[in-house]
Amino acid sequence: MEQFMWRWSVVGAMMILMPISVCAQGNNPSSGLISNSGVVYSTRNSKIYVVDSEHSSVVILAVSNTPRTVRTGAGPVSIAVNERTGKVYVANSGSRSVTVIDTDTDDVIATIPTAARPYAIAVDESSDKVYVSNTFSNMLTVIDGKTNIATSLKTGSADAILVDAPNHKVYLLAYESDSLTVFDEESGRTSKISAGAMHLEGIVELGATLYVTHVQDATIAAIDTGTYAIKEIATGSMPCALAVDSDRGEIYVANYATGSISAVNTRTGVMVWTVKVGGHPQAIAIDGPKRSIYVADAQNRSVSLINIEQRRLLKKLGLTGQPYALAVNTKTNRIFAATMGTTPYEELSEPSN
Image (cartoon, rainbow, N blue to C red; front, side):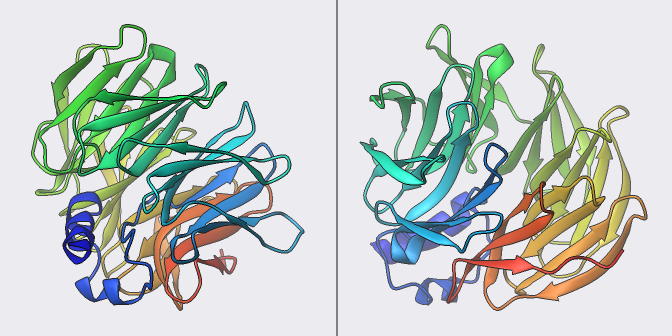
């Protein structure tokens, strides 16, 4: 049964981004999930937090200190940070719980049970609420950050969660769906809105617009959060991951099937450039000050570096493990990839601009 769950989670939660043989790399079959939220950067303390699912822990990478390992529940898969309260929340798929870490001390301060196997996690800093989806379940776990008390709501399955704090909305994305579930934080009610197509993978927000990838074709949906009107924007084939550059007003799209990165101008709503990186890109991170985009390709064990202003591929870095998520320390410009393999992460070398 666990073998089936691994295969389905890769297809459902991460599309078809991993070869099935990946399941043989880990020794802990209780989890078998991967998430593009497996690594996060905290601006509060300039630390990187990355899950180590195989060893049921989180590795903490400070600016100058040696890496520190903190035990969590079994099979941690994703992380979210509340910069206001200084707490990191880790979804432990194997033990059906969320570990809470104090970023000031990097100590575990609470372990909170969830409704089922947690997968996606997101924080609303304004309300101090934590939202956790549960794999193979229609339950959404909601954690009160002040009390650490969890409640469960029937919202349907979710592979990704986006919090729209100013409008008190939470958007739940499910891969096997053509719609988004909208949870109203104030009323507690849920509703459905069209996402324009089946098979949804990535979701981001910029201004009053949601951007959602249509994995089965070559478009992303731009959804107006006021009217929920949809505009389709052409990209490369099988768009899966998105990243927001609010300074430039652009959305960057990883096109899995065509091995490319597309840039969408959010003011005009059209694709303005495409850079070929080859392979199967599936995760993106941006380093604004260095004008760089970092693109992870797990199947080919590489990360591509793109110069945004020059709109060209600078170089490709080969990794030992399979990178599935990326984070940039914007204070030091150090770049880290969460990887599957012998180690949970790898630090990337600086690009040559």
